[in-house]
Image 1: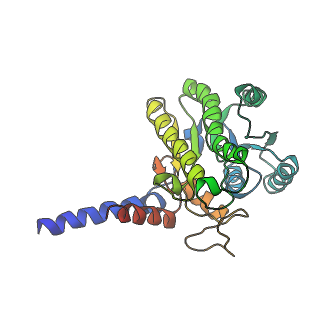
Image 2: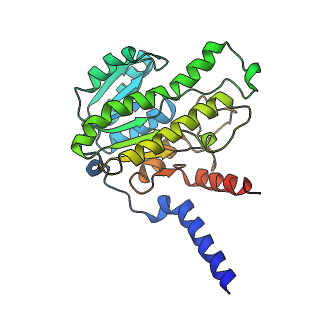
Image 3: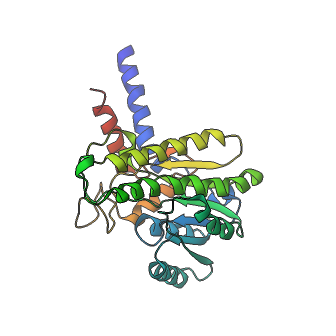
Length: 279
């Protein structure tokens, strides 16, 4: 009997962990948690970043779109302005392969002119294909760029907005890493390692600012259907949601759970991989 009760408790705990944030918890008022109207989204020209910008605009946040391609940002801003005429949009062109602090200063100066309530650290780079380190396609500079883009922007932008969020004692930071960061990922070496750094940075910041009233969430998605998905798939599926569905699902969990895959099927994958690693 005791064993059955223990198994039941474990089952209920796993059930709540997998399904609770998506189906059992009430959505938090993100405006109340943010304490300000402007939201910053990096890597906003397509994919998950663009989807987060759409969903936040739907919630009536004003949006600052940051990416390195002016023409893509212009198209996204035009789409958003057409769909959400009551929302304000701003574009900042910035190349996150920048590795020097002084290169970030113009970006900081521009961001400081807005009262930022939400920061979505989404920008990232993946490897051209899975391979052992010395056989990775491209030069060593490419590996350095992947490492830089997956680590430095989260650190720099978080440091910029946290100063004012801490004074306000409100704010939301959403750090998007990957399920690959949760365990060793052979053949994805630089990508996995750099995202693992981002994962631990996000966890550390959450602990440091736990008493400041700031919501810092870590997302660890598995595959999401975007133009750059590897390996290629033809269309979204149960385990590979569209970027729009992923962003919509992930934003429902903000304020309810500190770390999550962001999508129920992904949470199930994460849990199964955790259990597989125990044997």
